[in-house]
Length: 481
Ligand code: BG6
Image (cartoon, rainbow, N blue to C red):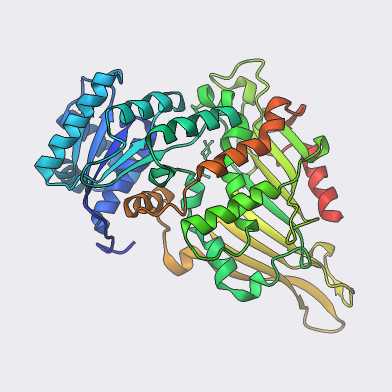
């Protein structure tokens, strides 16, 4: 983002859950940056506490912006003074939401805002239903003079039926066109660039099918353990926390058909078609793991069961690997080998497309594994692309060695914007392309329902390794086919 290039209609952003971690770490720095970039809004930070007021909340906010956003304290304080107000929601009764409405109208009068509103639910998921009803019943789902948008953080439901009920409740008050379900992976530049790469470069799209591709690997590995989130994570596990949302989004974007246009309706329609084409998997196609004590980045680390706040007999998976198949003309027979886990050797998210080998092996390769071309799309860190190809080693004979074409984002553009910045700006613009549609979220839960009902046996893996051996065997077997 360059200075003051953003354009938005004037509006009010109301964050519910403004004393939470997400607000401090992400939303405040990102909202500051958006103002700097030219977006035009006032922020109303709402939380339960009646102890806080404008001044004390602003002081907290500035501290967070300095700590997490590395912003200048003076500038942050100036921004907070002019662009930020605090409001107490109390217990969230009907009267509290009516009071919120009065407060919103009062700020809009004072700041001369036209009635455009974004409600951002940065709340624990169990409070989503009550909050959505509260907003709706206080009449805040509509604005008499402008637009009203609702942003919902993940997790959206904990299974198919809870997601359906939540969708029903949302739709009782809001139209789908007002709803922005966040999956922060969709805001990552590298994920968006996958669409640009595929549909902006005809040479790749013409190879993007079962005739040319042997397998697709999707990996989201984290070196961190469960950290301070055991209360949530031990209930959720890797399937709900990562697979149902982030990895599923990556699969759909890697696999979707060419959309008619680059807009929300066309892209979401194509993603939904991919989800519906994924065939039921068998038990041999799934591995669940849980980390035991080991080493991470040179330090000894405890096993999952020894982590603070984890039940001592917990059966929660911290690793999932799946071999998924998409039964359509483009992908029939191509394994999508997908894995995610905590306490892996390093933080690394990538999509690797393994192309088929040349039909006839004419040359010697110095290494069997380089006999096929491989495209790596590195989502983080070291964001970029790499295409491996064989090149002749100079000298006698005809031996090929793997070499690489590379593109690195940082070399070309410097630091990439935070995904929340991209997504929030899209909400301000009313662009739903990078948000998850109601049907999509349900299809994705439907896909994993058999595993939620009957999870496979949990396999241990030592912290600092690439997951249970069974997963590595499953991948090796599928790639060799
Ligand atoms: C969150 C998960 O949605 O994504 C976390 O709840 C996970 O468990 C995080 O660590 C990973 O996000 P990123 O952007 O760091 O890859």
